[in-house]
Amino acid sequence: MSLIIAGERSGVGKTTVTLTLLSSLYRHKKQVQSFKVGPDYIDPMFHQHVTGRACRNLDPVLTSEAYVQQCFSRHSQGVDYALIEGVMGLFDGVKWSGEDKEIAKNIFPLSSFASTAHIARLLDLPVVLVIDCSRLSGSVAAIAYGYCSFDPGIKIAGLVLNRVGSDRHLSLLKDSLEPLQLPIIGVLRRQDNITIPDRHLGLIPTEELPELNAVIERLADLGDTCFDWEKLLPLLRSSKEEGQARTAAAYTSTSPLSHSPIRIGVARDRAFNFYYQDNLDLLQELGAELVFWSPLEDTKLPFGVQGMYFGGGFPEIFAQQLAENTNTRDAIRTAILEGMPTIAECGGLMYLCEEVVDFEGKSWPMVGVLPTTAVMDKRLTLGYRRAVALSNSLLFDAGTTVCGHEFHRSRLILEPSQPLFKTYRYDSEEFTGHEGWSLLENLHASYVHMHWGATAEIPQRFLEKIIAKPFVPTLLNCD
Image 1 (tube, one colour):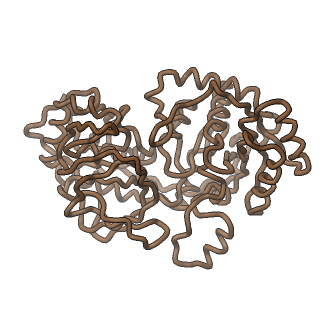
Image 2 (cartoon, one colour; image 1 turned 120 degrees about the vertical axis):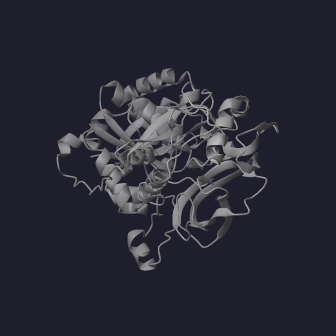
Image 3 (cartoon, one colour; image 1 turned 90 degrees about the horizontal axis):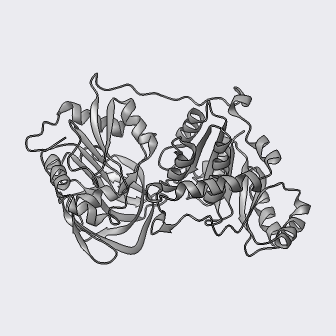
């Protein structure tokens, strides 16, 4: 049986516990497939760094409930263990956005849509609850009891007590929990020497942490000793041992659109690294040849690319280096203005602006395709969005509705006169604004991140546009 690591709230140490488990299992030569609930990009980077396997996001808002089941079933096959890291607190999600309120009452009597509890119900998996004990003793029992009894449909198989201060502290916690007869799966002390630095959008990504391997080794050491493996391993029974007990959800594969590979330049470096692996997989299944390159380091576009994909990331952190790479900025601008189909999400959109103003107020020139400036701000824009396409564009027909996610601390000083989307809060009709640029028919530039798992027609349309009108550079300087 696979397992979900959940928290009683955000910040209790879910990621530390998950990485500790993954590190210890990997050290013992186990193949582990990890998953992350929600739209997160950075935590999955750490999972992949430990396991060597791409972490998969399970998000029924960005995809669908059926896709969550398909994704989990497909990628948990053939491995020793599957481990899911939850999001926020166990029951924290969003309101049901469907029209049938009676369905909502039956399916989500207590748990919010897209919460960790929702995923536990959807996949019928047990939960290990992480509790931050740093300011608790006897009250830990009330917290544990409340989470166990709040929704009878959720099976809490045990607890991980995190940030335990001393032997006496642990004794008080155990005495309080004993009447509940709830297994204590692990105990993590206050490990001040095991920290992963963060900044304005969460943890600092793996590529920027040269000391990360040493941290992972310490986590593996911790994992070998802090968990009760006799209690834990039965919860993590091998999928091979399960045999066919779990019925694999049907997976609809896609076929290549062209006999010849369609070369797509995917910007991937320290500045641009927010990509859902499923999006990249879909492009490849549809016939794309992904060419990974760096706007930070490379001075030319990759040879023969017919389209470009700029994901999110941290262009503001590397603004000076991006600005100084003038040859690459010129090549990108020329390619887009000459008609190369291009997708730019969030950080990618910022890079295509005329300038980026960093947190210190310094202005740096960028590609200059979009006639606006991205300015860093302390205000966080965060949340799921329903986006309605306002006109025909590179990826959508007018009137198409998609679900996406915004997560950024920048704003544009000039909004588009012809925006891509009209956006709403996912769970209400609350209008959030006009968003994205439809300045050029070959460019999709938006703050809204999209997961294409349940909407394969999006990458398919992108590649079909390339096939219908192959890009032939005239002034472009490529490798």
